[in-house]
Each structure stands twice: as structure tokens, then as C-alpha cells.
Image (cartoon, rainbow, N blue to C red; front, side, top):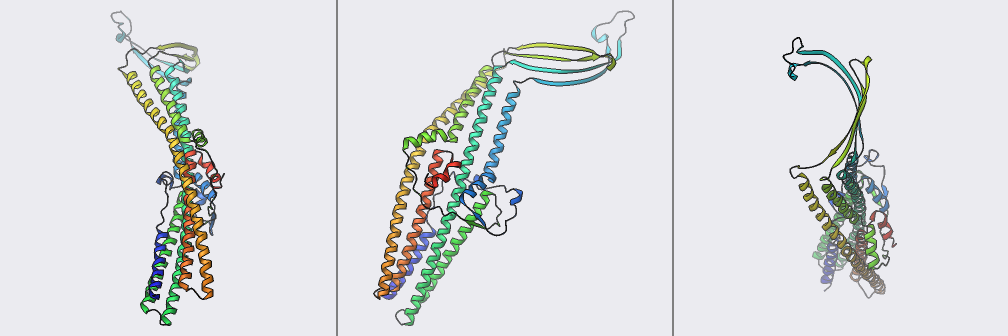
Length: 470
């Protein structure tokens, strides 16, 4: 009977260790996107700092916002869009250039029909001309160019909103990896507790064998289970170190840098917020929604530009300079011209541009409608997850309190001589599992907060506040 109790206790310990090692982890797809995992360290960070680096969650997020590759790439994309805006503006501004020319030529009079005149030379020259002048060309009325500039401005604002959306995504991605590392550290402590439990069982089985109460095979079996627990602890330590490498990769730290995570992300209830207020907040702060709106505005301006290309345009061109046979005989000359361009037939180019603009506008309008509808879905789902996570934390806290009370009673019975060490070890193991379940529930709660702030928008500035319950 005693042998079965010892064996059952050992199997319980191994099952608990396996369950801890396989605890599911929430991984929001956007937060864990591979594009947010790389970084470019600056020159003063290419070498590891001496000693461990104390890293808080806020420090990790700030480093990620400075060095994450997704932000660096998106910033350059925003600069590219800004250059398109300058290019569109150039079409509405005067263009000024300077020309300096010295020409030496011989003209054929026969080529221009001056033949049959007695004594008239067939060649004139050689002679030289010297010309220096400033040329100005300015649009006076070009409706298509004006609408192209409006579209470029809207695209620039959309790129800016996209940039801020990427910054928020990176902030949440870095926070997610950091919280995973915190949970991995808790799992490591749990597996170490399992090792301690297994060691106690080995000592107990050894004492029981020495007293002749259990067979030697039970001692061997407990030794094997102890090695399994130690292997689980090694795997947990390996997982933690790999998670720290992933965190360092995301925030621009060298792989050789030793990290000490200073934040434990304790449980803080989320501030109560109504669905209606949350939806209104999200519609105001969601960068992806703002991006969709700006893209619709850009598409509308592009549509107007396509229509405006069918209308006449007016330009003024002029030049002013000096002209003469030699630099010493220069005379001031100038010219001014106004040109009205009237499109009559362009082979269907304007119609093709209009059709393309119509298709783009309908696409952008559909994307905006989907984004606006998605805001409410995202907010409602996030609030439901917060409520479920709150309940899970409450349950885990109750389970931990129950396990500690059972441990206290087991200790009392053991001291009174009415309970064995098996019951005591099992109670200690139950406390470890309950503590681990509480840590996991807090982690899931913090992930739910990340999903909520992602649904609300402006995660770069609001996530740390939400973690603190604000």
C-alpha cells in the first residue's frame, strides 16, 4: 500500500511538471509578427555592457521604439511618401533655370531656297552668338495638379498614421515578449520547486527502503523521476534564456548581453469602461482607422485629378537675358508667352485614369467601412477577454489560498504524527501548481490588456498605464 502511495505521488509530480511546461500561451498574431522581432543596434550598443543589464518593461518598450527594424523601415517608407508630396507640389510652383550658350555656325542659303540670285552667296558665316538668360515657367491654372497635390497630402497623413500604428504594434510586441519572459521565469521557479519535491520523495523512499517498508525498485523509480524533474527544470531555464534572446533581438541589444528583468507584472484590475465609451475612444485614437480615412480622401482627390486632366490648363513662360555676337556686344532681350493647353484627343488616357481612380476609390471606401465596423468587434471582443481574464485570476487566487491552507493543515498533522511526508510533499506540490496557475492567469490578464489597448489605439502611450489599472 505504501509503495502505491509513493508511486502515485511521484507520477503526480511528473504530470504537474509536464502540465507547467505545456501551459498554453496567448500569442496575438499582430504582436508576435516576425517583422517586429528584428532590430538594428546603434554603434554604442554593438558590444555587450559589462555585467547584467537591469531592464524594466518601460525600458524594453523604449528601446524597441528606438531600434526595432519595423519602425526603422516604416519611417523610411513615410519619408518616401513625403517625397511624393514634394514632387506633386513642384508641379504647381514656378520653375526657374539659367542657360549660358555660345554658338558658332555656318548657314546654307540654298537650303532655305535662296538660289538663282546672281552673286548671292550660298553660305553665310561663320559667325558666333553669345546668349545668357534666365528662363521661368509657372502654372497659372492646372486643376489636375492641384488635386494631385491634395492626394499627396492625404497619402502623407495616411503614411504618418501608419507609422504611429507600427510604433504601437512594436510597443505591444516588445511588451508581449517581455511578459512571456516573466512567465518563463515563473515557470522556471515552478520546475525548481518540482525538483525539490522529487528530492524529498527520493529521500523519503530511501528511508522507507532502509526501514524495510518499500522495495529497492521504488527508490530507483523515484530517482528516475527526479532526473525527469531536473530535465524539465533545464528545459525551463533554456526557454527563459531563449526568450531573453528574442527580447534582446527585438530591442537592439547584443546577443551576449545578460538581462535581468526587473518587472514582475503583478495583477492590477483593469479600470471599468463601458462598451460605448470604449468604441468612441477607439474611433478617435485608432491609427489604422485614421489611415483608412486618409486613404479614402487621397483616392477622392485622385479621382478629381483624373477628371481635372480633361480640362484646359494655363501656363506662363518667359525668359530674360543678353544676346550678341560677342560678350562685348551683348543686348538685353526677353520673351513672355502664355500657353493654354486644351486636351482634345489623348487616345483614351484620361478615361483610363478616371476608371482606375474610380476602382481605387471604391476599394478604399470598402476598406474604411470594414475598418470602422471592425473597431466595434475588436473592442467588444477585448472587453470580453478582460472579463474572462479577471475571472481566471480570481479563480487562481482562490485556488492558491486553498492550497496554502491545505499545506498548513498537512504540516500540523505531520507535526502531530498523524500524517506522512507523502501528504506533506503532495501539499507542497499543490501550492507550487496553484502559484504557477496564478502567475499564468496574471500573464493572460496582461495579454488581454494588450489586446484591449490595441483595440482602443495609441498603445505606445497607453499600455503601461493600462497595466497599472489606469
